[in-house]
Every structure is written in structure tokens, then in C-alpha cells.
Amino acid sequence: MKINNERSFTLLELLITTSIFVIVAVTSFSAFHTGLFGYRDIDRNIKVSLAAAQILGRMDMDIRNSIKYSDSDLKFEGSSASLSFVTLLDQYAGDKMVRNLAFVSYGAANGRVQRLCRSSAESLNAKSTVKPDEMGGDTNTYQLSFRYGYLDDTTKKIVFKNAWDPKAEKSLPKFVNIALKIGDKDGKLKKDFARMVFLPAA
Image (cartoon, rainbow, N blue to C red; front, side, top):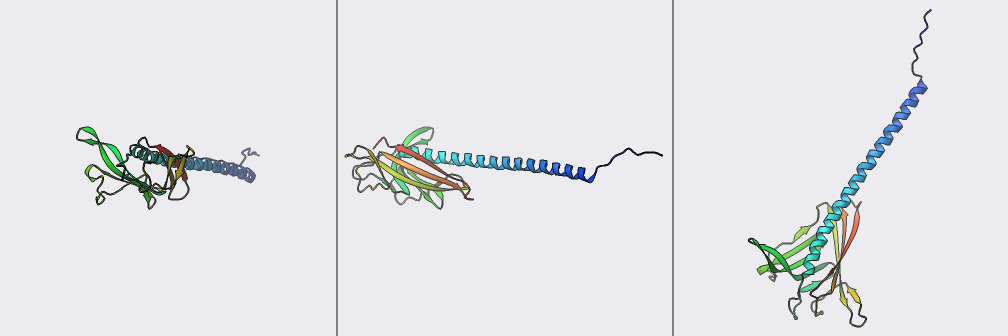
């Protein structure tokens, strides 16, 4: 009589093996899923930070070079939501760099930051057909606000207010505080950025 020593898997062993495989698969998928979404979040944050740096850097340069047009007409007007002023811009003319007078305006419309720049002969032409440029990425929404700082003669401290009226003020503000909020269209990411710009011509 021949005895068969070959042994097959029992049902219990198959169940244990299958359970281990499922646990390993679920753990691997969770790690992959977390890593993928973590990468997406990092990538989104980097893009938002780069967009903020581009916008605030451009605004910083424009505002820092702003000038008082005349004693009777500052041509610097600001509210909590928009800002317009006369500034000096370095621009290429042929093969050399020249400094031109320009009228620049910033604001936000339909969730986008808009920059209007009229330079040279168009700078003071209120009827100019020059259109504003949109700044920042297409996948983000933007909110922009301003505050204006001046030196209080009584307290000798910097005081901020939400508007700068050229009819009431005799000089430019000492500082412009810019607050920029950027969010994605899904509403999953919202980041706040701020920059304080000093006006040397004030």
C-alpha cells in the first residue's frame, strides 16, 4: 500500500494568506495615496507662493518708485480695494534702458489681480485705450487690500488708514501695506501674504 505524503493547503491557511495579502495591499495603497496627495499639496503651495512673490514683487517695485506729480495734484489715490499712482519705470527703448513716467493702477476684479500701466505719452491720458493685464495663475482666485501709513505729527507714530484721498492729502503716504489672499477654485487652499512698501519720495 502506497502512502501519499503530499499535503495541500487547508481552508484556514488560505484564509490567513489572503488576509495578509489584503492587509499588505491596503497598506501599500494608503501609503501611495497619501504620498500622491501630499505631493499635490506641496506642488500647489509652491505655485501659490510663486504667484504671490511675482505679484507682490511687481507691486513693490512700482510703488517704491512712485512720485508726487505736483503740489496741487498728487496723482496718488488709494482705497482699501484699489490703488493708482504715478511712478517711474525702467523700459527698453531700442537697445538701451530709459526711465519713463507711467500711470499704474492695481485692483482685483472677478477674483483676479489687475495691473493697468500707461507709460510715456499715454501715462496721463485718461481716455487711453490701454487695457489692464491680469496677474497670477489661472487656477487661483485673488483678493487684494491696501492700507496707507503716515507719520502722526502729534504722537510721532506711524498710523494706518484705509484710504488716501489726493484732495485731502498734501503728500504721499510713508508706507503702503498690501494684503494678498490667494485660494484655489476648489476652496481647499487659502493662503495670506502681506508686504509693507516704503515710499522714499514721501
